[in-house]
Image (cartoon, rainbow, N blue to C red; front, side):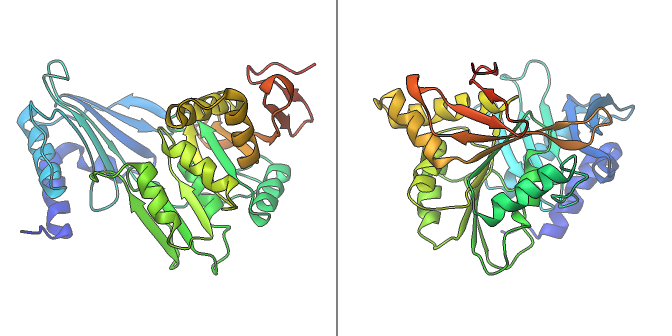
Length: 325
């Protein structure tokens, strides 16, 4: 029997009880439960312990059972991990005993719908704003890098808003986060599917997209996206977890190398360099607001198979972040 979204949403809110309204606060992006009595809220980029708690651990387990049932899956001692999505788009990630020691660990991540745009405020000045708009207009391939919670998805959504309405957009994600407000968009999700994200990306690329957006590269889909970019799918945009542009390249290369097998490093780096144009690093300002920290252009790999990164200031850096001589 299919549970109506409205009824399920209300059931979850009733089960969450005292902490349900934390998910409604505009400055709260995540609610983290370490058992039923230690509740933390991420507000303005900072983790703050809440005075609220659930009556018993059973309340928290009841929420997980309801969410897993809605998703058509189970969470128990034999399957102690779970990743799902609530009807409002919020993500739920959970680990229960025996994998979690003592008590269930649950994170509710709210969907951050478009509140940002590629303007001077978000881009810290007209230079970055103009650069990104030009890159989107030229259909350049962009990799957005940053740490968890830095604003990678927010920037990806802001860049997607610059895609002309007459272009068809393919969105591929592990779990739904983007929720683009456009008619001609195709969204494919890997969570709950037996197909890998690499396979889903391959299927989706045959659906005649003009642009391809991939959320959170973390596996073989990295090589698949680079392959598509070098094969002529211009305007690909994706995100990757990394603290710097050079670290983003190293992680991208690592994921791609696992999928590529016995491919020489020189060939792999040349492949990546020819398929990627810009790396945009995002972080949080001291007051917790997302911002663009750096934009670098990736040149063709040169001698000794070294990536060449050109920053906006004109400095050239090696992958370890040091200036090139």
